[in-house]
Amino acid sequence: MKATVLKFGGSSFLHPEDFGRVARHLADRLATGENKIVAVVSAMAGTTDNLKTVMLGVNKQVKPSNLDAALATGEMLSACLLEAAVSRQEISVMSLNGYSLGIRTNSDFGRASIESVDPGSIIAALQENDIVIATGGQAINQSGRLTFLGRNSSDLTAVVIASMLGGRSCEIYSNVPGVYTADPYLVPGARLIPEIAYGTIARMSRYGAKVLHHKAVEYAEKHSVTIACKSLTSDGVVSGTVVTGHGNAPSVTLARDAAVVSCGSIAARNKLLALLDQQDVSAICTDDNRGAGICILSDVDFALRIVALTGSRSVPVRLKTAVTELDFSTLRVHLEDDYTRAISRAREIHERIYPGSDGEPVAPRAAKQRSTHSSMLIRTNDASENAQ
Image: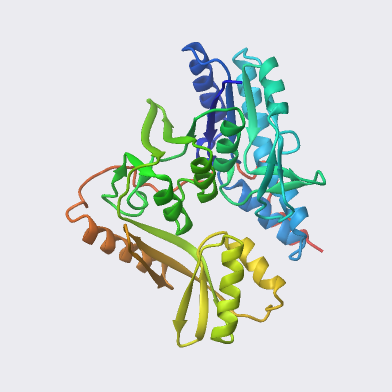
């Protein structure tokens, strides 16, 4: 069935009234000729972190399957709120969550991998409704238990649904309209990249760029789905970057809270690095005065759980910020203890790559926002204080 697939990130929902704004955009799309729409939603900005804090406050050793089920409620709330907002526009609408999206995964709770898809339930919902709202980042395993596809994985859900429905494109809406040569909130003069190749943005994502999830990009390339990065503003839609088979640009990424794991020997480090690579986790070798180590750059929570399962529970872990310079054939990673120093280094590298770019205002300079309503159902401090 032909349908337009749009994904709205958590930054699209900073306030409850933002659901009405997105609903009006969806109504406008229908009014201008769209046939059917699937809107994939993330949790309100900050909700996932709040939920995780609450769960760990109750039990620091919470089961990964239990944590997945809890984190999924953030997207479920967003889906319910957007369904209510769309209904107010007198448009037929239905929301679906991970239990009924037709996406099945393995049982790697925390960052499950997709094993099969069945578009039947989404097609049935579209036959009865003009708009279907889908929760991002969640699915079920072969036993019917809810699984989490990883942090920022709503992009992946949107791409998978587009492919399931036979579509060749997917629109991703976030607080920036596209992919930049550096984080535009931190690096003045970061340049918008109009077109970028799948492999290039996937590589950027693995080393800290937050615009798109690397698994979403890899799935899109495999299934020939073009990704259009956009931003929904008070003035309308701003289109920025198209992710397709072409386009490249040198870039600088920052990965805050990258985990540096100190290993007892070179052999132990190489064994752990091979295991992380097998699990598709981005990590690099480090050598300092503390001995052999590994810096984990992506899917940190999932990776540290893998480290724990190896029995290396006494391995020291330090958090650093990784600044990575990416070029056509270059990959240089700098580890900084101080986040402010990391930002300075990123700016220095970007200025070297793009001289004289400081004066180019390409994006708002305000800090990334979290929704003030992200804890509308929970209070993280109460949960921690009352934990037994």
